[in-house]
Image 1: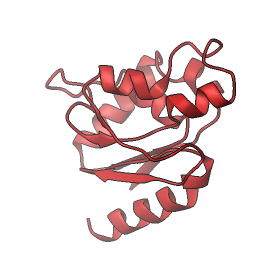
Image 2: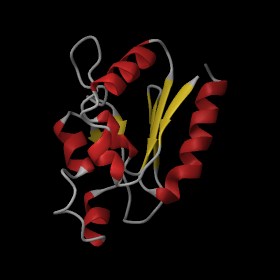
Image 3: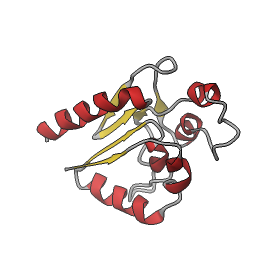
Length: 133
């Protein structure tokens, strides 16, 4: 089983403070479910805490729409936060590549992709992870 956050700028407003979704992610992740997110979708992970009180991204390799891409779109002053910066603030080991390049990161059933060009790779990584569970 897996859950997958798609991207889109709306996620930066809709997902981070939704306590019900945070609780669902915590429960399913701690029960062995794969969590995937691409582009702006990882914004839904920035406030998710596990039952040990640590952020789900703390100490894990992740990636997302990066700061440079947001700046390139001239939206850095529009969005409530830059996802790359917020993930790092939450203890994530952020990794990515140059702007508008595909990049997929897998760490402990947490699968994240940098931008829309990463969506296929995230889907393939989720499928691979599900086949190995």
